[in-house]
Amino acid sequence: MAWLALGVTQGCATARSGAERASPQPPANVVFGDAIAASGAKTAWDAIRLTVRHVEMIEAGGQPSRIRRRGHASLDLNDDVVVILDDVRLTDLRSLQSIPAEDVLIIEYLDPRDATSYGGASSPSGVIAITTKKGP
Image (cartoon, rainbow, N blue to C red; front, top):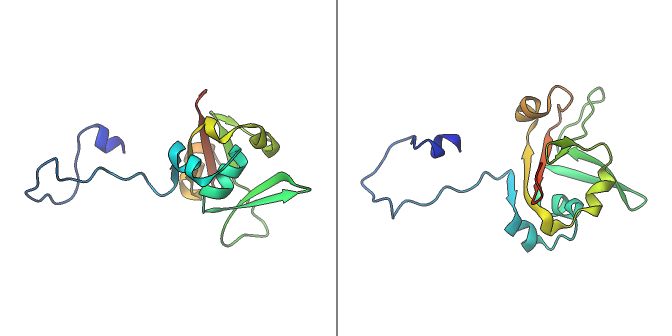
C-alpha cells in the first residue's frame, strides 16, 4: 500500500472520475478490528482462530499451545508460526487468552516468504503480527 500513499498508480487507466473508482481493499491476510468484532471473538486467541484462515490452532488441555501454518509440513522444519504482539515476539501463546478481542486493532498473517523479512530466519513458517490499541 506504500505506492498508494505516495500517489503512484499502476496498470491501465480508463476515463473514469475519481468518484467512480473503488477504494482499495485490504489484502486477504490482514484482519481489522471491525472484522474481529463481527467474528464474535472474545480474546486475541479466538480472533486468530476465527479470522486467520492460513493457520491451524492447537490446544493442549484447553490452553493454546501451538499455531501452525496450513498445508505441507516438513519433518525437519519447525512449522510453528511466530506470533509478534506489538513488536514483541511471544514465547507463551497462553497470553493471547488474556487480551480482549476488542483491544486488537489489526491481525496480519505474513506467509513464509514475507515472514523471513519481518521475523528473521527463525520464522520460516510465517508470522502473525498483532497490533493492539495500546500499541508498541
